[in-house]
Length: 113
Image (cartoon, rainbow, N blue to C red; front, side):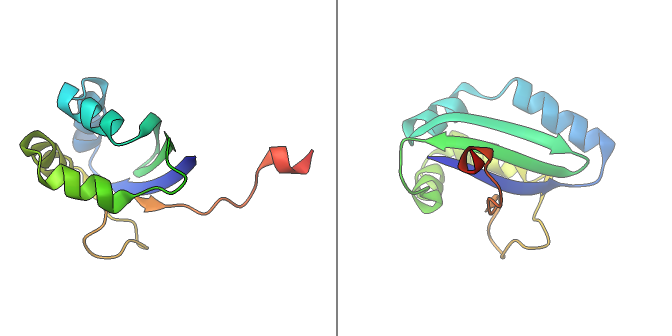
């Protein structure tokens, strides 16, 4: 299953550059955690301060709560998430306590053929 999620970054060029640098050298524990929870592929794109994540999973339903609970029990993942909050900001549509928000697909070319 493929998901598209959104998150914002704080509007600070230095923080944005550091965020991108950290993602070019993501911690192995983070990669292992992502893969261990059914994520087959993940890409993050940026335009200004808006991030878009494309994530493909082996699940038919994205279980953000399952990954969050597993992250809370892993010290390295908790540390990574705390570090990321230095750079990240919720979108205007994000409920308190959440980060990445699922986006609604409004067009798929394959469905038009």
